[in-house]
Length: 341
Image 1 (cartoon, rainbow, N blue to C red):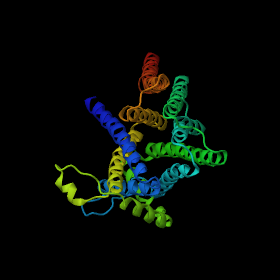
Image 2: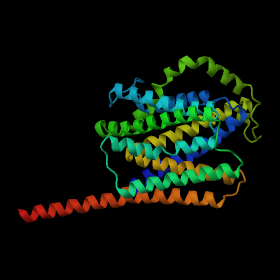
Image 3: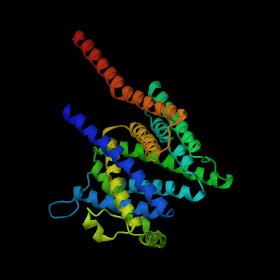
């Protein structure tokens, strides 16, 4: 029991610590050089693929034979690359950050719909908690936009194109989540293989974008040298450009974040994963508001309450009530069969 709790705490720590830190590193890069999205994605993929490769190497430094057919890993890698690129591309259509957050918060809804289409069944309480959580994220996003004087609207042409791109990303992401769950159910929870191959097999897909990547790297490399305290002479000697330093920090925190997400995917359902990620998203939202000196409005507090309450409700229903109900039904069935004998 203690080991299960420890493993759960480790997963939660990686997701909330890594993903929330990643958001701050991303903000630093965007403020330094806004047009860096593609390079950020490539750096994250390269860093994660290198780090995850150690789990897939034999003592002779050759790749282990995968436990899952390569055709499946290739398909997952293609979907993973496409989802990341579509989400990134949406910013090019003048979609504001609040709109981006709002639309991506519907991941739990689309994942649940994708699961239902594949024959999965959810209780009324699970469906209700997902609806409440989504409403909570919507309220929080609008409250954040209002408090910072931002509009959650874009021009009609750009908005239409951006919405279609984000909708496509959400549908593909939901399908990918269910497909990964089916892969784990069939071949076992080989999340380390997934972490490696989903990133490694995606790298060749960046080749047609080499010119854009070179331009974005040159822009970050031309930023001023990072200010380093005198207590860290080793870092001072590197004279890292600020943009490159933030890029490395972003990749490191992304590794922690994606490791936590893959761990959770191997332990829980696709809907549970999206619920946890939505709660994490709001934590980043609220933490950013506090750290940058903004006050939490009543609407933001209400949205936060809905998200955390709905997340707790879904967790109680999925992790406690449903397993307890199944256990009681099994015991009743065994008792009934025992009486017949």
